[in-house]
Length: 469
Image 1 (tube, rainbow, N blue to C red):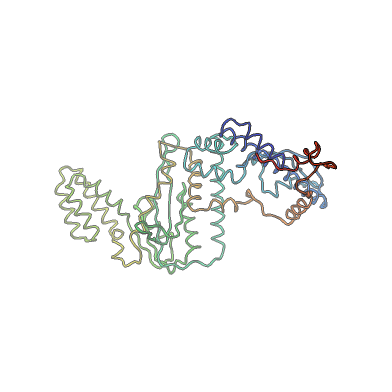
Image 2: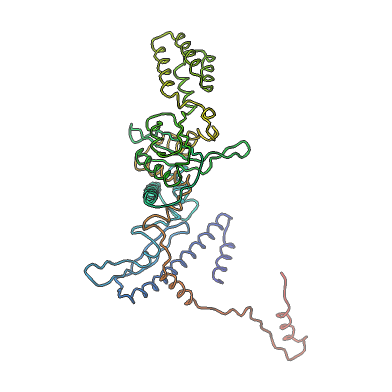
């Protein structure tokens, strides 16, 4: 402790500016911590190897390993052991106990923080942020590799959870109304190719806080593969809810892969399924087809659709057709008429269907695209399918607040459970730390056998009298 205090005082005195002072202090603290951590790891490795020796293992060699985390870079020595035999394989007890994979250089928390920062900025900016805020140094290529590893790991964890859902037995929650929405988001791929992010979100309605509304228990799904997405959502719904007592309200723009039949396949066995065509896309379709008509006529058609009146709507469409001046405009009116007829049941307002759910509980899928579009479409960005899939998975994991669970739940993950052997090792290590008795400050005095006015008496008085500066 005296050495550390001395070093701190020396840095404070010799630093010219506050920035230099704080930088040197941070370097000192990290160096002391990493050295102490390396010493602790090597001590635990010694204790673990001693336990394995009792089981017949022998030390094969001693290798150096470097691990990089937010706390700095730690380099330590650990032993590789093995048993005699034709099929015996060597391993590192300390790495196995800590859950460190082969060739793994970065800790779990470091990867998690890099992934979180990378979902809001490009890889170069992420690397620059990490390098400035920590004493580590990574490149933007390393950031991309970390994103791919974390995204792939979360996808595997999702797959394992889906398998547990299909084979497990859990009590589904009781619910009255369930809202499901889906939509696709096009992004740029490599070259002239386009890729589509398929998204489905599930909620149990809305709750109001003043003028703002919030989804109740939302859960988000996203993938580049529509078939896998449908299978994942189906397994989640069958596991989470007792659909036999649930009224499901689905909402979409009616595009490919998001029709009423697709949502019906997700909620097979539900009490009632009502599909609603998204009002925003209906109005946009109306504006695109009737661009040549008067705005007042378009407003009347919208009002008629909101009131769900078939006959007045046909009259208004006839009026729009009479205003067409070219064959192309007539075709637009006919296509709009077919569109309305094809989706007439899905255009019915919820208040006419007598469903206990507010219209504000649906229609939020478009706004929830932003977290993906801002990161993956802004400034003309594009990427590979592998990198795009990984980024989609990481963003979804953060949105669902499942990234921590995924890190813990990965098979052979970054953290291993604390075994009984490891606990015993820690207790033995703690007992080996020498205990030092501190007696406090030593007090001395000058013995004076003469008068206090003598030279020796004055010197003894000067040492016994405290001097306040």
